[in-house]
Amino acid sequence: MCKLTNTLESLEKNRKIIRSIISCVAFCGYHDLALRGASYGDGILEGLYKMRIDAGNTILKNHLEHRKKNGSYRSVDIQNEIISICGDVIKADCIKNVKISQAYSILADQTANISGKEQLSVGIRYFDEETSNIEEVFLGFAELTALDAKSIATTINEFLTKEDLDPDKCVGLGFDGCSTISGKEGGFQAILRKKYKKALFFHCSSHKLNLVINDLNALPEIRNTVGAIKDIFTFFRESVLRRKLIPNIPQLCETRWSEKYKSIRVFKENFCDIMEALETLSRDGNIATRKHAYQLHAAASKVSFIFSLGLIAKYSALLEPTVNVRSITIPYLDSIINSLEIRFSEENKPSFTLSKLHPAQMKNISLEELEEACEKFKNF
Image (cartoon, rainbow, N blue to C red; front, side):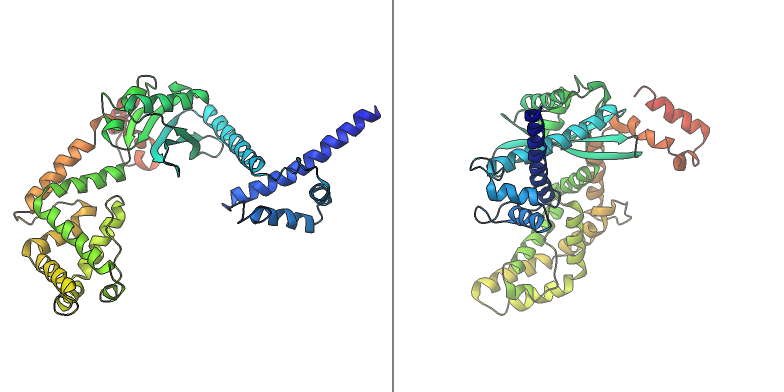
């Protein structure tokens, strides 16, 4: 009996030691802090240990001072194991909430880690009945052995099967729009939908809208204008002295559609100052600078450039009709219409009619319109 009591006391003491260590590691993770410093025994984690000891944690103090050589629980392997266990616990809690929800959607994106290995980041969106909110949680990474559609679909399916998620509750697949993913026949979204039969494929609307704008680069005038704007951005950003000649303009980024529109807008607002700076540099400075500035000034002085700049700045974000009947406007709007028809599929329209059930929507439509909407999504 005495031996059992000693064993229980020893177990409780070890639990308190481990609890103190885990809480310090979890604190670093919660606040996105690096555990280790430049050398062993240095860093934020070691600082937290010392702080707990200074605050009166005698159990942790005795453990660190009188520990066994192989039982300090402070090694890198132990730290990584604690982090992994914390991740498993958090993921299990998220999965539990997903399982009791009525429906969920899968989100995945392809990326590469620091060592260059291709992997998928997998997330889940679901409706939390307890909070009455739509939640979005990151579940983890799945390493890819190959980048073809079948391999990616198999990886996602194995990931979800391992977590024992009900395929019948999956109502959405959110991926990007490359052909390997979005292809209606060979894309991995099409392969997944053979198992997840209720799931509809959604490509981010903001991303698709950006792709619509990018499609307009097929027009030579628009493509040349955007290219010239990029060259002017690069020219001024190459030199600190040149940057001082014009206002601060964000660099044009093709993949960030809102930033791209902002860049075009700010460029247009400061167009006169930019042209004046180019004219000055075309006369002053070294030979290379004068030559490059003259070429950019000549390109930006063309009527087609000025008109295209105004057109892009106004319609790239708003996509509103225009009454200007010019040689560039009509093909520009035709390209918008064609691209919208191609990229925004009719297939997902029934699911969007679910918004008609919102009270704010219901009070603005007739009973006949509501019945028509219900008819569209009742099977879904």
